[in-house]
Every structure is written in C-alpha cells, then in structure tokens.
Image 1 (cartoon, rainbow, N blue to C red):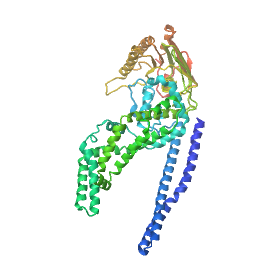
Image 2: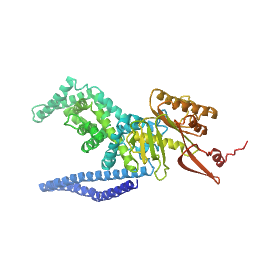
Image 3: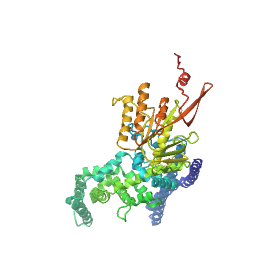
Image 4: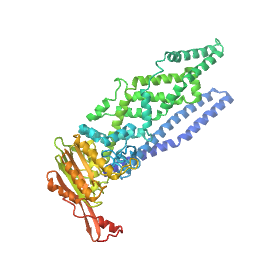
Length: 602
C-alpha cells in the first residue's frame, strides 16, 4: 500500500510540474490576443483614413494571429483543466487509502434492509464497501457494480476469468484514469438513462410520412432558387419572402414534435459526448485477458463503423440541435433550409439504424466500468490476494483474514477453516469482543471472492455458494412489524431457501435476540438442529454459552470458536483473536459498572 501511495504522490508532483509549465505558457496569451485584436481594429481604421490596401493585409494578418492565439489559449486551458482533474483523481485515491471515502458515491439508493445479506454486511451507504470500491463513471457501471454486490452468486461460473480481467485492469492505471478523466464532474442519473432508452424504442413516425419527406427536400430548393432569381432580377422580392415565411410555418407545424425531441436529446448532449469518448478509448485499448477481449469484441455494428464513431455521430447531431435553440440561428436556418425537419429526420435515421445496438453497447461499457472499480480496489491494495476456488466439496480455508474497510495497520486478522457440508461454527464471546465484525469480515470477503475481486487474506480457498445473513435486524413502524417478528421473517427466508434445495452459507448474529432468555435458548437450539439437516454451512455468533454444548450432541456438525477478554486490575483488554472453544469470560456487568450503573447483589 505504501508503494501505491507514493506512486499517487509522485504522479501529483509530475502533473503539478506540467501544470506550472502550461500556466506559464498560457499566462501571456490573453494580453497577446488583446494586442493583436486591437491592432487589427487600428489597422482597419488606418485603411479607412488612408485607403492603403497594405493596412487591410496587415489587419487580416493580425486577426489571423488573434484567432490562432485564441485556439492556442483554449488548448492550453484544456490541458490545464485536465491536469487539475488528474491531480484531484490522485488526491481522492490518497484520501480513500486513508479511510476517507467522501469523494465517492455511497450507493444509498441500493440500500435494501430485506436483501439476503447486503444490508447486514454494509454493502451500501456511507463508509460501505460500495463507497470504498466504487469508481464508476457511468450510470451503467454504477448499477452493474451494485449488481455484483447484491447478486454475487450469479458470477460464480466466471470467477477465474474475472480475476484475470481485474488483475489486467489493475495494472492499467493510465487507462483507468483516462476513463475517469472523460467523465470527471459529469453525473449520469437514472432518469437520463430511462429517457434515452424510451426515445430509442419510440416509433419513427416522420421518416414514414411521404409528405414530410417531399416537403423537407423540395421547399428549401425552391426557396434558395427564389432568392437567386430575385437577386438576378428575374423574380419579385415578395417571392423569396413568401417562401421563407411558408417554410417557417411548415416548421411550426412540426413544432411540438421538434421541441419534445430537442428537449429530450439536447439535455443529454454532454453525457452522450462523454460516452462517445469513452467508447473510443475502449476501442483503442488492447486487452489481453479472454473476458475483456470477448467484451470488446461485442462492441461491434457492421464491421465498418465502430460504436465510438456511431455515438459521436449522434453527439454531433445533438450539438447542431443545441445550436439551433438560438432564436436567430433557428429563424435563418429554418427559413432557408427547414433545418429542424432535417435534424429530426437525421435523428430518426440514426435511431433506426443503430438504436437496437445501443443498449448492448451501454451494458458493455457498464461492465468495463464496474470491473475498473474492482481493478482500482486491487491496485490500491497490493497486499490482498486472489482467492482459489474449491471445485468439489465445501471448503473455506482462510488465513490472516481481515475486513477491507479496516486499515491494515489497525486490523487484527484471524483464520478459519470449514470443511464439508452441514458444518456450523458457534462463536461465543463477550460484548465488543469482535464477533459481529468477524461475521462481516467473512461475509464481505466471500462476496469479493465470488465477483472476482481480491480479498484481505494471505490465503483464501472457498466454495462458491449463496450467502444469507441475519445480523442487523430492525423493527418497522410502517409495516407494523416488531423486532422479533422481523427476525423470524428473516430466519424463515433462510429456511425456505434451504428447503428449496439451495446450498447456503449462513451468518447469524445473536439468534432470537428479540425474546426472553429461555425462549431464546430453546429456539436457538431448535434452529441449529434444523439447519444442520440441510446442505449448508455457517457461523453463529452468540452470547449464549449453552449453545456451545451442542458439540456434545452433534460432534460431526458443530465446532466452537470464541473471542476472549481479560479483566485485570479493573481494566478490560481485548485482543480480537479467534480461539478454539467456548468463551470463559463475559463483561456485561463490568461495562455497566464502568458506566456508573449500580448492580446490587441479590
């Protein structure tokens, strides 16, 4: 991690040096532009006084210099802005590596308390796994990354291929940063995506209208001809004026259609341009891993035009639409050429020819985008390893396992091995000893493993399996559900999944915590006795030491692990290290006394 931190810091230094050089070049350009522009005006003034054509030539030269300097100024400003963005990208990564994920989206919109594990494992929200990993620059990439986290089991068949893809992209820092630069500061929202898709599937009514096609070609020809004839004195002035007015009336006939399409598409002009650049970037980059090569090969149309150039066509068309919103330009262009009608026709032609391919291309960009987020995570955590997949019987063999949201310098790692089906580890421990964190550590790394990402461990061999948890249960006033009933529903969901034949990895924290101690113990024992009948495995964290006695009745299915605490000289110490056996020391009354809550001995 130190190496990559220094790499970001070095990159900032290099880019800042480049920015300083560019700023020095750009510094005097405004003054030079002013000098040449005013010189051009002075030379024209001298021509008007002295009628010497030399002044005209000199004025033209000064004006040309002004234009060239303006273009140069724009280029330099663009490069300076690019440097600023790249510096910010590197600074954001440094923040992330120091545990500050505030520059990145939290994924709050994906929070689902009813999901089988994502809510329990803090997949989404502030300081979540999504907040830590997400670097998606497109709405498609953002949604796809969320899909990875919520439906991790769906990717079980391509784990090895995905790992190679992530590893390749992790090494391609420049490519990933170029992708981020394309969309920097540009937010694509779900509404934009939905509106654009609705337009793509809408009916092309104008191109099928014979009157529309005849009018848009013949009327401008007649109008231009009337103007030429009028200039030549072969037609009265009223003729071209009448034709211009008539064309404006024709445009107004299609005003509602024109305005609706323009309003929809011109609002997307910025983001469409970005997608064109992103696709062109993908097309130029040479990938090696089979999964990425296959993805790129699906970015095709007819073998001649590439998606990047096709989207760029739409981008240029949208720029014309945007320019045509200017009232003066609209009157001139529509009065002479029925420009709006040609723009509408061009948009419908583009949609008819390419519309069916667009959703597929955007989905592929989303896949690249989401994989790039995982690659960035891998790049920022070079100490992490890519897991090995157990192919036959169930196996989880993890060494030095840590939570990816806890800095390596602060994280206490643990190891765990589960071999075979129908195996459950009962994890006992005092309050704050690390039981819940360990459940989340195992669950989070399991999700990362199934989607092809590296994990926080020195060894991680696992069998791909569905995950189900009950760690963070809450009541619901809106649904009139008590805490206890909400937990029962959660457990019922797990049982239903097992009854349907689904192999499941189960994480339970303090079973039936919403009821009295006697019912809780009896219910917990009954639940565990039921769970071990199914082809499942799991970790059960609890304060109820009596559950540890289940190993006597089910020695082949139950094992005991614990987190111990030490209380010495009225001070509590916790090492957060997982041990064999049942917890021997509890701390509830000790902590209550520390908080000033008096406990009388009965």
